[in-house]
Structures are given as structure tokens and as C-alpha cells.
Length: 489
RNA sequence: GGCGCAUUCGUCUAGUGGUUAGGACACGGCCCUCUCAAGGCCGCGGCAGGGGUUCGAAUCCCCUAUGCGCUACCA
Image (cartoon, rainbow, N blue to C red):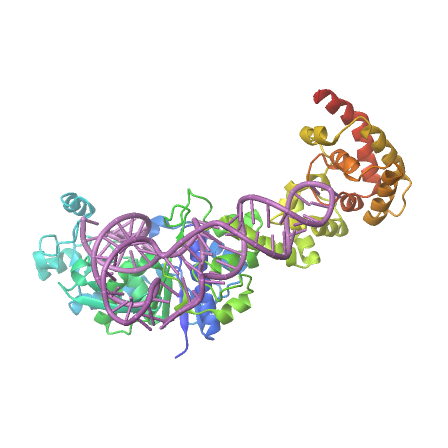
């Protein structure tokens, strides 16, 4: 039997990083086993629907490199997979359950339920079939009459009194729950929409899903699903409940404690390969001593059996480290063209491809993300406005000004403005006076960049170019230096 | 409260009865060095606790603790 798996998000806004990982594992599993990956939109809660989120979801999933075989915008025998467009199907199955005695009509209003719940503080509420308003207490004739009169009703699952429900989870092994702890779950809401449980079971069966790979938060509801599969006489798909992604404080990863939308990380400038790589390794690891994998390798190595049981904390420091590894190893040309996007976003237009290539080549080892280069080395994009006064104090002495002036003259005579030539000429100048490079290189850095850190100074000057370097030195000596001398007193 | 799941360095993890418990990130030190990085070397640091089973347990069983999840006409 060929593998068929699905990713079934709710269109409530954006793609959550936990959702991305679930999607990724489903994708890996499908590709590895040459199966199909289906996208199904679980939009059965009309109150939570956010306009445009489906498009957003698909866009982000595509960014991550996930391709679907069936579902919205893909086509296929079941397309479009919007649960909101399949209401009649769920209703039909819910009615069938009622007819066969596995479910029943109930008429309790929200207020009545709230009141009943109020009597049982601390979440001890369990729907009491024998005292609430439903077809058993009212009588089936009365119930049908009420329905025909248009009185709102729901269909609830008739959970057996005390029956042990066992199931096997690929990641967690054997799990047993007693049905006495399972509530009479609503299957069909009064607005005619199904709840997750019904829609999910019906669709997974109809769409011939072989493996359900989803988050651990669904584990407690598996018994309800098993009951449904049994009631319909359907085979239960293989189950695999993924460990949760956690905040630093080990609670379920959520907003308010950092960014949880994949789009936020795209906006920050993480590479898709790095982000996917990082997310994929949260809860699963193909080996002991490696952490950089291409999507193709992740697919080849993926094994559900090796997925961890415990939740994993989403640590952005590790993400930065992985992103940096990609930054150091990607081809310069690719980086440069991507860098143009970030640079122009900051308003720096008219920079040549060649210049961007050089800037990236020089600075990528010093930052974690491509756009970070702009903040790390702003002097590559505009002349420094601020000068680090502490840095000035540390390396400046009485003869420094004279040396800088001499070096300025020296530089203006160099035609082959490469870092090697610059280095040799400056060192020669210093050696003639028995001076060390560090006595002048720092003031030079301050004058040209304003900062105390950055790439090699000669390399930096080469990239900036002769004209720019000379102008900056001039400007510094004439306009800035008197100011800082004053200031540092 | 009930039910369920989980627990290896700070973090991500390797490990499936015999290992000096391995790696990566972070952190600290050294080297390199014009600064900042990168890189190299070294270091710090862990099997939640208690009982068993066994010649032998991070690995198997039980209990405890802790954490998390679920407990909606939300998914």
C-alpha cells in the first residue's frame, strides 16, 4: 500500500514554526516512501478564519520547499480540500452514526452547558448523558420533532461507559486510555459544521491517509478518533505524534515569547535551507556528529521511529549558528544577488553587483544573517556619522595625526589600490620610522569607518576604493578630528 | 482536579544491557591576529530521585518528583 500523508492546518493567520515542522516531517516521510502529500485546510471554525491565510500558508510552505501532491492550488481527485466545502459529507456520516446508535442528538444551549460546568469547578465537567437535554432524556420522537421545528441541536459521540481503548503510536509505543475518561464529544455543531474530530476522521479515511503525523497536542483525543473509526468500521491509520516545540520556559511554543510565525523568520533574513535544516532537527536527528543537511538528505534519512518523545526548546541562538554556517558556505554570487534585496530595502540603491559581491565576501564571516552585514558594517553603504570616542582615546597619541596625513599623501599616490599593495606601502612607511602597524591601523580604521571593529582594514579600503578612502580621510582630518579631540578632553 | 505524555551537559542531541556517556551551539581559556570575526587546540558541563531485575543499567520494571499537553458547539 502506498503512503499517503497530509498536512492539515487551520487558516487562522500565519504558519506557525511548529506547523512547519509537522509539514516538513510529513513531506520527508511522503518523499522518502514515494508516497503522496496532501494539503487539507481545516476551516471548520468560522469564528477563527482569517482572510488570506490560506494563500499565506501556501506561500510560506512553498518558501520552505514543501511541495504538495494534492490539495488547494494543486488539483487532484479530492481538490479542493477545504473542509468548509464538504459539510454535507460530514453531516451524512454523523447522521449515519446516530442511526447506528454510536451518536445522538443533544439540545443543550451554551448557557445550560456553562451552568452545568459551573457546578464542577476545576475542570471536572463531563457531559452527563442522563441528565442533560438530549434524545435519551427527551425521547427520540420528541428529539426528531424538535429538529424538524428547527431547534438547534448538535450530534454527540456516544462514548462507551468503561472500555479500555488501546492504540499504538509509532513514536510513543502502546498507549491505553479508559473510555470513562473520555467525554461525549460533539461531532456536529449546531451551525452544521463538524468539529475537528469528525471531519478529521472522515477525511483521513476518505482521502485514504495511511499515516497521521501530527503534534502531540492531539494525543489525548486519539481515543475519540479510535471510537469513530471503530463505529464506522474503518481501519485506523498509523499514528505518530510529534513532540511539541517549546518556549524557553518549556511551555508550548507561543506568541508573546518571541516570534512563532515562519514569516517572521523569513523577514529577519534567515535562509530557507538553514531554517528548514534547524526546524527539521528539532525532535529528530539522523546521526550523532553532523547537523548540516540538505532537504534531499533529510528526506533520505528520515525515520519516524527515530523521532524523539520529549519536547524541544526552540533556541534562536542555535538557529543563528546554523544560518551562519550556510552564510559561510554559499556561493558568493548567490549571496550577492540575495543581498541586493536587503540592501535596497534599506534604501541603498545604485550599488553595483561587483561591489555587493565584495562586501559580502569580506563580511559574511562576521555576522549570522545576510542583512546583518548592513548593521555590522554601515560604512560600506554610507560615510560614518558617528565616531567611537573610546576607540579614539585608546589608540591616539601626539604623532598620530601627522602619520595619518602622511599616509593620506601616500595613498593618493597609489594607483593599484589593492589590499596587498596598500599593506606593503603602509608597512614600508612605518618600518622606515620604526613603527608597528597597530600604531596607525586603528586610527585609520576610526577615520574611515568610525568603528572599532570590522574586516581587515586594507581589504576594507580596497573595497571602498581609492577615491572614497581619500575623501573620508580628508574629511576626518579636517572636520571630525578637531571635534573629537575637543570632546575627549 | 482528572486523564495522558515526557525527563541524557544551559540548549539541540547521539546512545536501544558492558562507552573514560560522544557531537554541536552557547560559555571560558589559549593560538592566529591591525580590530571584530572566522579557523585551530583545550576546558567547563549531563543520565531528575529512590527502589528493584541483572555478573553488569542512561538503556528493562516499579514508585516518587517535576514539567508539559488535553480536559470547548477551537483546532
